[in-house]
Length: 175
Image (cartoon, rainbow, N blue to C red; front, side, top):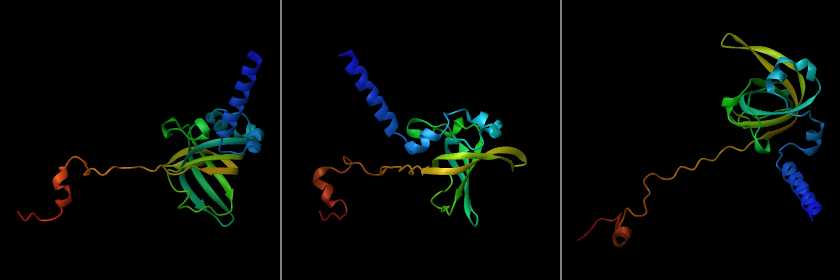
């Protein structure tokens, strides 16, 4: 009985952890285990050609003649590989994607998860301060859907109008 319970638990854990990923299983098996982003940023030459899975918030999308460049503010990945809060960011990275990506779709502040190979790093200036960027050639990109905010009507109150007079509220009173 104990063996059956252990086997069933192992199967359930495998199914739940494998089904929650937005990156394909093949690329996940080829990628290196998650490491600290600061280490990737400081030692990109040690990981050249390795596949990594990163996520964050889009800062800018730019299209060239043959590829698109996405600048991303890194954020740690949470459950299902969704980027967590940008407050926990450890730096920035650049995604190189062959082909055209629409800047209106891949717009600022959208969440993104990418699996790609490390190409190197580059230093760019942000307000006269040199900032290192990790460069990644994308293999698979997942753009998270926008959060739909529901704002209830602040003026709706079902108990505001008394029931007998509710249907006459828009008409003038003749009595």
